[in-house]
Length: 274
Image (cartoon, rainbow, N blue to C red):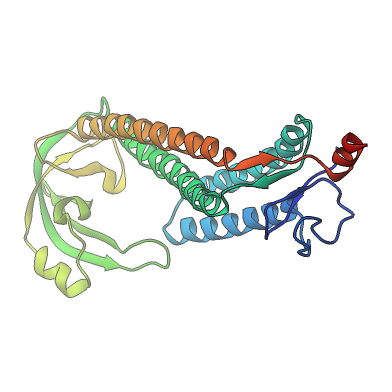
């Protein structure tokens, strides 16, 4: 089935790919929407990949997100000719071009919102889920972490790494200081001022774990319980926001369809007149 092109000036859909100019307004037809759609998809992949790599997203998440963009583009490129072929006449004109442009921008923003909510909601949920099950059922003891030295290390990806070496019950341990500081210091000097040597921090010690995961700040709630709450809150509000954004997207698409009116092809009109 032949694909369609659309005049960028008057919005007329053309089923004849051999036409170099629009029969309605005379504007030049220079590109196929399918080509433009794939170019847009590649730009989205490039921008999203760069953004996710800069902020330290796992590479598997980058690959999944890029694959979803390409899959969505492929599906939309296959569905459009089929939908167009279901009408008696494939030619349509835009009755309200200004409203059409406004709705198109709103649809693009809504689509972006759906992608962002789904992506970041999934990442936040999985982080809380992983932490929840990492500490669930682990033996622990309450103690004090005595800071010996704090470290401020910058990386090319993501934010700075802020942690400390110290002792818990006379044994050397390591602790991530983000959970203690709440806000990030700007440099090593500020970190030393906010977490100097000898600082005592109440913590949970998990002997069955390794590295910095062994020491977690004691704020009155076990890490497994706080992470479970965070996961459930993210799931609740994430799915709710995704539903609202998806419903709004469908409404906008439906409204944009009302901007079109079917136009009889010139040949059919001539045949009817005779």
